[in-house]
Length: 146
Length: 103
Image (cartoon, rainbow over the protein chains, first blue to last red):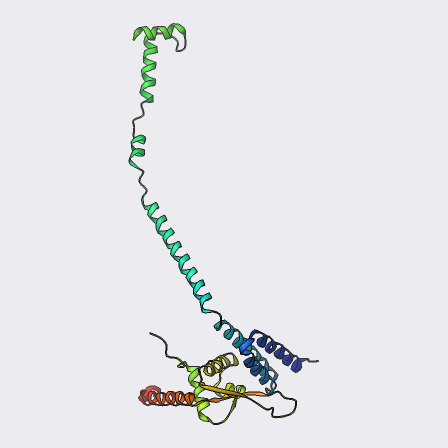
């Protein structure tokens, strides 16, 4: 059992109907022109191909009649966005190239570490006084030796 | 440099087909079969040529009862002039082409 021929033609008619809905207004006459040809095409599959082409023509025509201003606005937005992106990338590249730290920071980091010297001096003084580090006598002995 | 209008291969084929029987009104499906253009290409071309005043169209009464009226087309005088101009330039370029290209 095959529902073939009628089914293809029904689909074709529906597709052409959609095409005529896409093409409305001043172009509706052209939509009717495309639709009327379907009835003169004997082969059902050829009618379906014709209908698919009609939909393509309808959408192409509809797109070509969109306001030019809208297209210019959207393309302008794309250009502006691209320019902003390029500027951001350029700034980021400039920042990553400048990797050396500022002069003041370098000065602070390069100061000599004096902590071990102070600790060794304190140990020497404590040993010289012969006292325990945290005893009262030791503390006084260190102070008097100065 | 701006592109020359109505100079595409498809438009030239359509104009050449319409020029062959320039006094006869042609249907869209017949034009599609003769030019090899699909309806998705043919109808935007027909619309554009019509808007440019190169093509005239009208509704023709149905051939048999029960069938819808058909939209038919033919070139206007300015369309005929353009088609003839393109046909002569095509002929000139065909003459100027190297003859041993297919040898």
